[in-house]
Image (cartoon, rainbow, N blue to C red; front, side, top):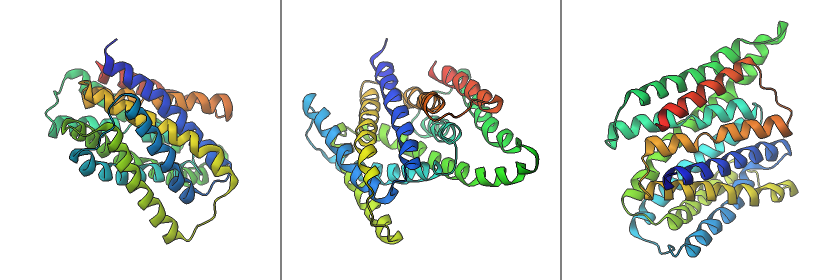
Length: 290
């Protein structure tokens, strides 16, 4: 198996587990602002540890330039996504969020010169069908008089997840550009974590939410470390020669891990519309990864 594909697959597993733990953390009543502020510490520490172990922990200009940009985009995306999990289902919202590879692939083709193929076009079409099946069809589904109310309740979380998807689509391209410019992986994440902390502190002050419940400590070390591993391995997949239109779709398969964990441990159902969404998404990932 080619090294970029292997790195992308492990990144996918780490990201899926992190998304599931974000849902568990939200259900336990965390304070998101302080959670994300402190989470940046294990996030940065894990990246520096990996860099040290691999003998690749020296900062450079590209890391300094692109790292803070990565931090701002990743914070906005994660903040919107985790907020969407407060009211929405982990399976649906994670599916929408993780299909950001559709936009990432288009940007890579238009601006990075990556090749357009028939399988890529088919994959993008399947991805659109996957999103439609869990949003449009899922919004029409309901029981009796609750249909309209349910559609309203699901609209806001789905919209937040879609906006988070946009931020992460741009973020994945920033990753590819940063690595192509020679950015050190460990310090890309470290400088990103510094910008992340500034964003989190600004939101905390703006919203006047300074409390730090005990449940924050239960989950933030795990999500911080897992998320750092996911980003680190994806960046190394780019460094090993992986194309953004291949690596990013594989990593975004992480929503399948999240859905599986949500079904096993949160009791969420895989109904017909969500099943269609998963099937279309798997088909899209297969076509795009070719």
